Image (tube, rainbow, N blue to C red):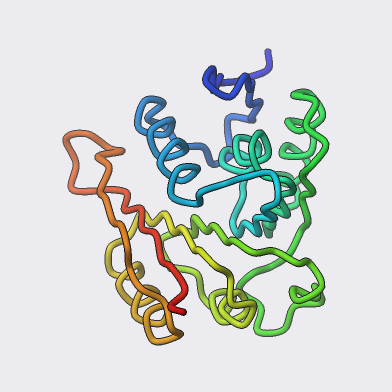
Length: 191
């Protein structure tokens, strides 16, 4: 049987395989998605560039409001699932591209995408070289979700040094009864 979870507020059914990465706390996941959408201040003219998209957990809810979403992920199996989730949910304003975001050189021409807002939800190691590439685009807003405070602080310092201001930050208790938390932050480009 196919495994799935629903994001009722966004009228989405998300299919996944038992070995795929998903956010395991359904209630906190939905709150993170809602906060990310609110902090990205999405409207129909926005093009969101997302890194580390997985099966489309954030991408597809973003696509319900944004004009377009370009979502990147290194794992080809996750990209396949994300595309199937978009197709199943009849979402056509999103594209999923396989891209190893930890490579120093990436074949993707980021400047040609025209993205004005960025979202990232990297693994524990942080955003790596991809952070430099998105900062070169000078997006209006960056929303960052992190499961590791140490790598978040390192990446946040790079974002701040690149001319951004930390406007909002919150912590979500994704793994109740453990020391692990998710951090979500909004960075705004200084004028």
